[in-house]
Length: 172
View 1 (cartoon, rainbow, N blue to C red):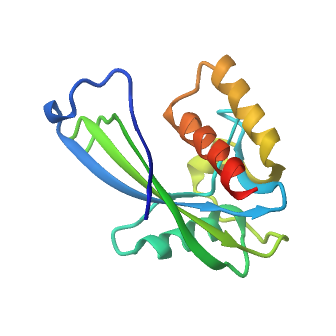
View 2 (cartoon, rainbow, N blue to C red; view 1 turned 45 degrees about the horizontal axis):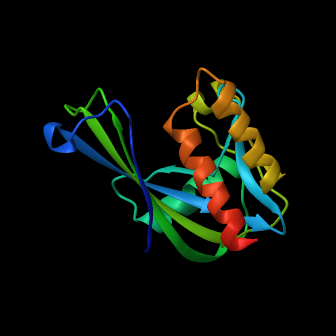
């Protein structure tokens, strides 16, 4: 799979100075015309691609399908194709590590437009997450505004906005 981008948190020094834990994630890119399936999170006022951490017993594709079904209620997931890897290094304060190296494996896929029931985790419910179809350009503008105005912004909204811009250029 192609390497899309590497982002390093601005407060980190040379990575060789840290204990690093690696985390694998899978993210779904589901496009229908100019609409894209996103998760809106009220707490952070941003749009993110469906997906997340891959469990120890799963491979990347199993994690992708599980996350997409749980977070969006997606049905009939098919035509899964590799898109690219976005990696990031961010401060981490557990698991006896100082930095997390997140490797996000991004895949395009198709699903039925009508979504089923979600199965959010407690923290996702508390954060006000919900799946939405949104025009990709509206999602980009929204996230750009959040990055400019929010005190809760972080590397996640930067990753998502970078990916949305790339998807708009390459897939629309």
